[in-house]
Image (tube, rainbow, N blue to C red; front, side, top):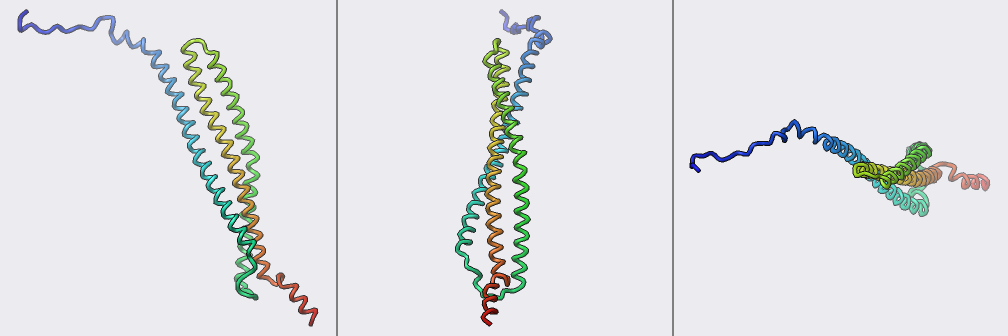
Length: 220
């Protein structure tokens, strides 16, 4: 063999041309697109669950803060015996307490309106949960009855999707229930605040000293 002989280069077989290979990849591309769509739906559901979870944790923290504030305010209310300074009290003080009472009553009214909205919210999330439970059972039955490998793959994808949707609905119900409980505790705090302001106001007005004045007038 001559030293100048060029190396042999293998040629591509005619039957392996790109034009003949591309059609055979079409089913694989379709399956990949279907899987990618299902994966994106599951990612969206996962992101929604994360958002609900964060809101749920925030509600739990707020409820804990309300309970601690109510406990502290209840202790102050039980031990309160009046203002440190004797009467008569400045008119500015009486007017300030009147404004506080009015503001607290408005806040209580707002919380009461929010509480009434939970009737619709609970019915909506509970109904959605029931629908997702039904869809999950149907997806499970479809997975168990799938015959071909292609049908099983599609059924597994749908089953995983419905499982994620079911988890999101269940967390939504838990979030609404926790929100309602937190608002109930907030209303209890509103009531205690209002009662405390009323007690303070009564100590600043002539009505609080009316029995003493009546006794003084009768004895005079």
